[in-house]
Image (tube, rainbow over all chains, first blue to last red; front, top):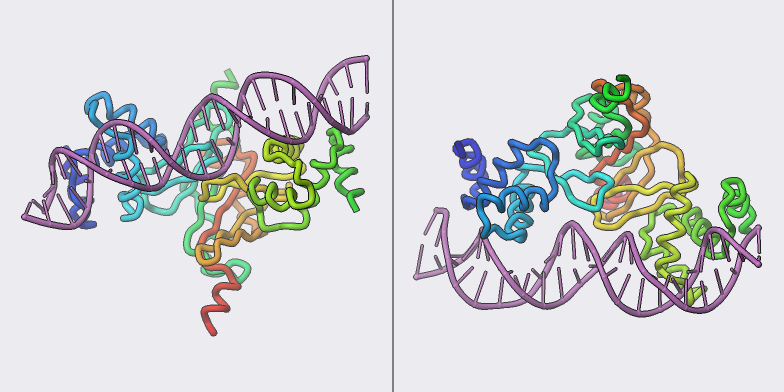
Length: 138
Length: 138
DNA sequence: GTGGCTGCAAATCATTTGCATATAC
DNA sequence: GTATATGCAAATGATTTGCAGCCAC
């Protein structure tokens, strides 16, 4: 059950701890781009000794090793994404949901934009998500 | 000297105060996307009575009235941009600079992406800026 | 066995809030 | 004159840090 995550950690030569496995699994199971507090509150139910510091430390290690990525929404909190590939996000102003977007922009592949060397691009699309639109129509 | 900013405020029927004019002028003169603290520290030199709360209040009013815009970089601070039109930003990981980018992505104009209604798009390009690249070559 | 990880408490830092005074209109 | 803005101090909330004990390897 945790094999998949265990392999991910071993590959990057990160020490395997139950907390790290739980956090990684949580992010894989919850693709809603949770905050540290959401991860902490959920996992604390099964592990009351869990510390928020450990969640901060763990997501940081996972991010540094390119296993997960940090996304920057407009909120005051940092959110994490199990995906580590380049993609974009849609932020719904109605329900607050954050949805992965996989469209490709021709400019995005460019090495140089206005003379600057581009390494990564993050796009944030804002508006009303599909689900909220359908709810409004009815 | 402050005519331009006075007109901007009057047009939106926002009360004109010296603090608001100074903050607006500061943002127009400093296109580096400053933080509230940077605005506050700079303006305090000529107006020691200035309060940081006023800076927070003012940028908020200016943002609500679509005179300036808030940008979301990876930092822990909110940064403001005198421009209010849709454009993107390049974040240099070498010098920390934030540069306006005006390229257009065909997908960005789309009303619908994956069925979601898009209203605005913010693109964050990360890498090494032109100036830092040139410095490295020498 | 040992270095790195965990968990707790205290510290930090950007931002927000409450409220009395001052000011724009 | 009145509603709104300013400025101060205190509160908040996410994140970081210091440190003692624990655990993965």
